Length: 203
Image (cartoon, rainbow, N blue to C red; front, side):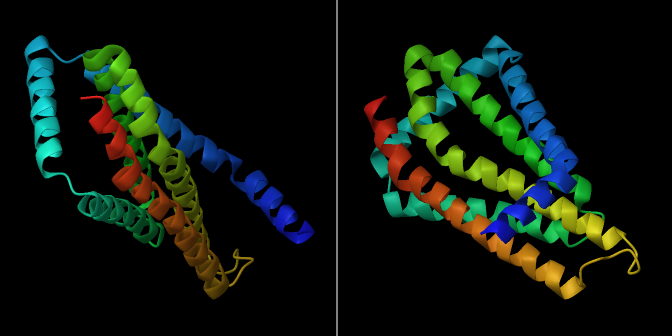
């Protein structure tokens, strides 16, 4: 246990700036998501609202919990896999930040849309349907991005500068990503089985 605490402390000390970079990208995405929604013209907002209402009607008639969960699992798995694969290449490093920014943007845009179009009901929808799965997926995205960037930086270093063997570093990277996949699975199950219940309660 002491060894684990020491390794975690060492990791955060060495990677604080990476966490700051990734966190900043996510927060910027969140901010621009809010801004993007508020800057839409009236006709664009009306069209978006109409599509949303049509989607809710379709949701009520054709919703299937298992299908929703499978789609959420697939989405989260694909996104985490992209981050993992980009970490294996040097050129993928900036693309990891793009994924994190995009994730923040989508989340910010969605929350602002619900608040703007549904008022207090939108706030409850965001709190009960959007927030719960993101409590697991957002930390997984951020930690996965940090690990991917760290591994890319490890690859950039010359063999003489590497203190850890390639095989050991890759194994640690793989195990951490598999652990994060469990978080993503939990997030997908919440999104597929838990969130739809509240969507039906707030038509």
